[in-house]
Length: 152
Image (tube, rainbow, N blue to C red; front, top):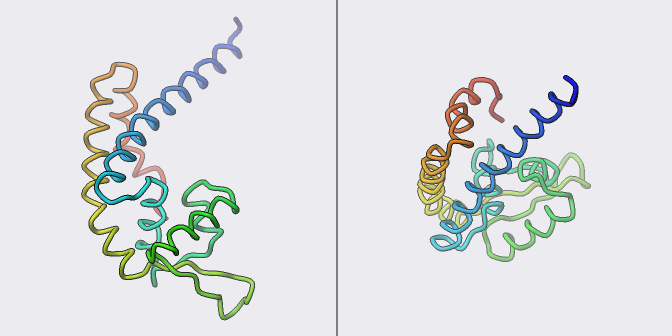
């Protein structure tokens, strides 16, 4: 194996480690959020993203980016949350083709109930991961990422 192959393998191993940590965290949060608030992780992510917006609304496109979903999957997710009364859609006054999604009072109430559950599940999953030699270095690096990645 040459130097180039070694570099590719190192990046691939890093990606596998990141994917393993993500899977462990997501499984823990999915179970906790479903049991406590009848929310999936991606549903929680939408409510959380909307709560962080000035005016609590986002374009559907922005929600898709925040959740890493395709436009059709984002639409299905928004439909589900709208049917549950957790968010609503509003036509953009400037661009009639634009649709905003906004958190409802019921959505905010459920988010406030789910947030401590989410945070505790994340903390527990990271503590569990920190005990695994293959994941511990990545867990230790997480606090430094906040300084590197701008918040949205």
